[in-house]
Image 1 (cartoon, helix red, strand yellow):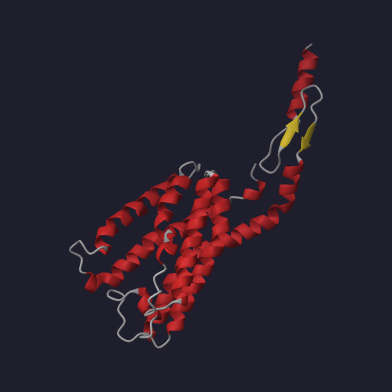
Image 2: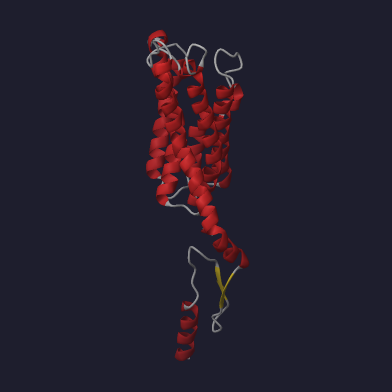
Length: 253
């Protein structure tokens, strides 16, 4: 009797579950294991999916670098431009001697934002976020990217410069990311950062509305850039975090 029990335990010990495969075992004493077709297929495709995801996440990291870098590059071509006073869009207006530099940067940052949506959506879901919230974050990235492209294609003083509701994802993004990270294991630091950005955004609302003592005629440009940092950085930081933890949605079961 003891030998039979040991035999069953031995058979069960040969069955295991790894992060890379889905394994099923029959009841002892047979102890037979097999991989499901879905797991095998996912394992075969994982290198390609991993590469696509990594490239997509890199696009997300680059969005704020391109956005702010284009402003720095375009500033010398706008006479008497002040980062404290003037908005970023003025660098792409007809007052600049090279408006294409800023407008091209805006379009490029928008394209990068669109491309980042896949990596953010799949990465958050693989990290443990609820699928609905993960893809809501991806949709916000699409919204921000589309708004940037729109603004670049309709530079000031074009009355259609403001993308309006097209850019709603910029304001919903921090909330969507907090909801997505709620169930992410090891995401405590990210949750803390995202709560900080949400509080900072709430504090900026009255300032940007002009109901505080901050003189927007003197510091409007600075306030706009602070707001852009608060709203543009969270998706990029999320993309960087997902790359650091090395999520691989194609091999996660």
